Length: 294
Image (cartoon, rainbow, N blue to C red; front, side, top):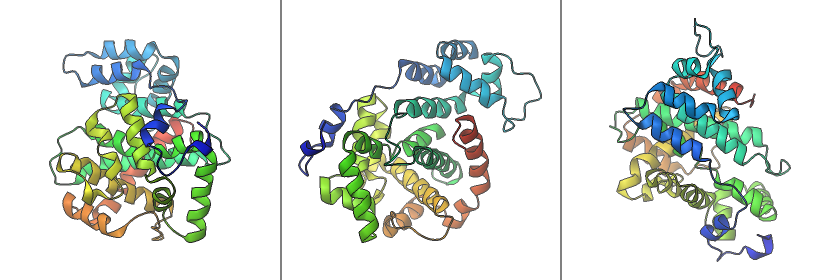
């Protein structure tokens, strides 16, 4: 799609449907179903991984990392699955596959390594928030990881399909010192979160994930059915943003009122989550190293 075709009245669904991005591989969904099944044994999961050379190599590499501190030799994918654990494999698989899909984004517009580090950090933060908040979650921790990791992915759709507009958004935000999502709404009539919603829907992810994404910036507007995921994703966004700006309090892309509501809804104090940064740091360094993002 050309930049001239995109106007304030353009629909995000049209931009995504016309996008040149491939779908997520069937292996991801097969792996997710296998892991979520109570009857699936480790051998079946290993067989799925062995059909995908990239995922197989990454799993072995990560299993051998110092993060797991295994005292046993890891020579096969079955050994790797046993060491990592099936729950972590969903997060790893999503990161591997999505990085591959967006491997050709123009690096002049965005530092892709930094973008993915922020996205992975946000996913890990969401999982940490879910573990520590007293609110009883209806989904697995990896559900929140995936929602948060992919919440900002609509930005990449803009970078690929509308690089001129994406560049203009960045320039206007920097000049006016306004959040980029405000500029997006002004120029397009929607935000990157709306594009994320359309892309995750197009990819066939669960509605419980993608229907919460448009509200992660303003979670106070989310329908009750998706409130929990939206608020956890928003809290993760706060933690990721604080980390990205070295905890200097520069929150230009974070509306303050929804942030306060997020913590009120989740029943946690901001400092309680900041204190979890050591746990987030350890997993973050592990995944970044395994995905060659250091």
